[in-house]
Length: 111
View 1 (cartoon, rainbow, N blue to C red):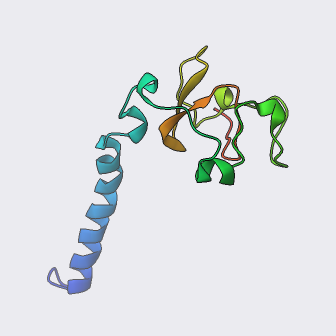
View 2: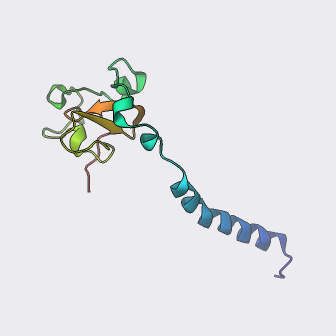
């Protein structure tokens, strides 16, 4: 192989793009940070995505087979609200706030 081999050039350029992509993504502003939680409206239960994920404002009333007793938005990795807040932003619903006592099928345990 020589330095002018097109497949080598392509490999090197793709490797550089692949290495730079995570850095570029980390520098992009997150939608969850776009507006303070107080400025975001509460997630309506009629929202199609909320319905698809079986969102409820009270985890105790969750009817999904995926629900595990004792889990709620407040202890989900997607929830970005401050401790003690009744509502806060969620990465699954960037245009709305969700209830800290709520739950949806997108729930994931915080590390």
